[in-house]
Length: 161
Image 1 (cartoon, rainbow, N blue to C red):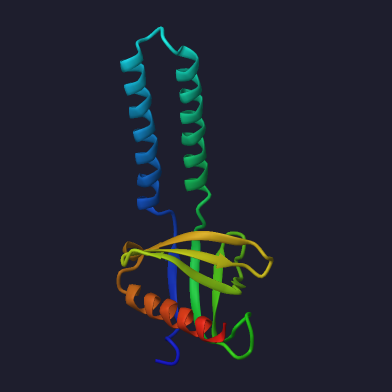
Image 2: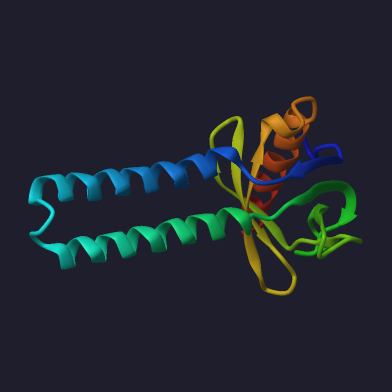
């Protein structure tokens, strides 16, 4: 396959990522509760308070991180000129609230592929990269087309470098 067909795919907050962050927070809370139980209520109060503050910071970061997850539409245009160079066929275009008309991305890297979810790193022409989870559940009928475009793009990029 030389080039994958054009495809549009919705991107949003990933439930798995949210559950991972929540699970880590619950694990931290369980460790704090265990430490409190073992050491008693009066012993090592300062260390326990530090743990509670760190746990609260973690939960704040987890909430902030999950809410900042990019939401929009990722489009593979097989006929467009690539922003990475004229020798590459096709281009990824990101549409979101900030980029209503779309912005052509320099590169899209599949960092973690879990078959029904893919963690992507989107490289913006403004030298800003962002992380986005793409899930099969968002559009199951186009999932295989999206993955074909992603894998064709990954192979094409590897051949150049």
